[in-house]
Length: 254
Image 1 (cartoon, one colour):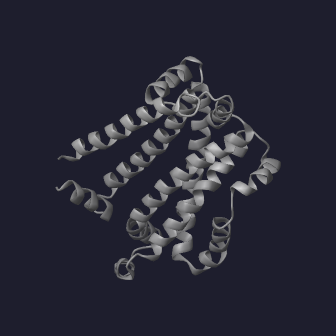
Image 2: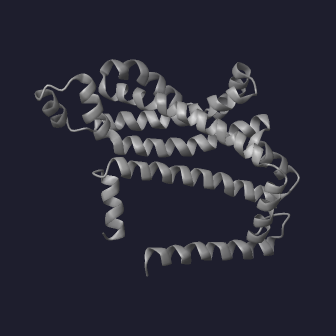
Image 3: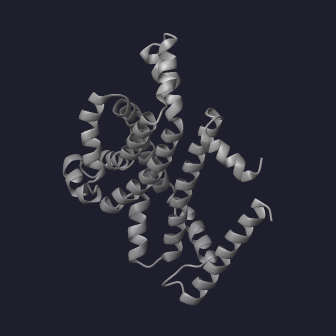
């Protein structure tokens, strides 16, 4: 059985099980596949695409900032003892802290507008990007660095052509993790301030409109899956030598 056939069987079985369970449980407790499809149509016809656009805006801005901050910070922490002793302390402290518990504090600092939601998305994603990048830098073979130095590479050339390229699989993994947690941060922030897709989920769940509730949930899952897939495709495009691509080719039997 080919990989495509396996996917059809697995996903087809899940859809059938979903539909049967929804029909047994009833629309008040669980929306079936057909009811979720109707909810998606209703979601679009009710003009809720504006909420989707609003959520995507805060997600992309917050995640973009986390990439701009997290990758350089991870390189500094991984390559420098001073960076580890200064920035690394704060990164580890935030990593073990429950960001959800700090949301009331963030609301006091930033209000309940777009600024708060961007900050929450940023904080939920930047730590994973930073930590993975730092781990990738630390795992670069020291012989590559010494070889580059022996050929007279400057610090900028060393960082660009050796450190970044050597740590790229780790950076890409951090970007995918960060994207998933950015989506999570987007929803959590919106649930607190009742806006965007998170606000709709809160309202629809309270009124038991599970057809639209499930439809929005699927949209959020799709955003996360598409973003992760896009990051992986970019990695395989710019780093054809990486272990990740070799693993994908081996899985495909190429």
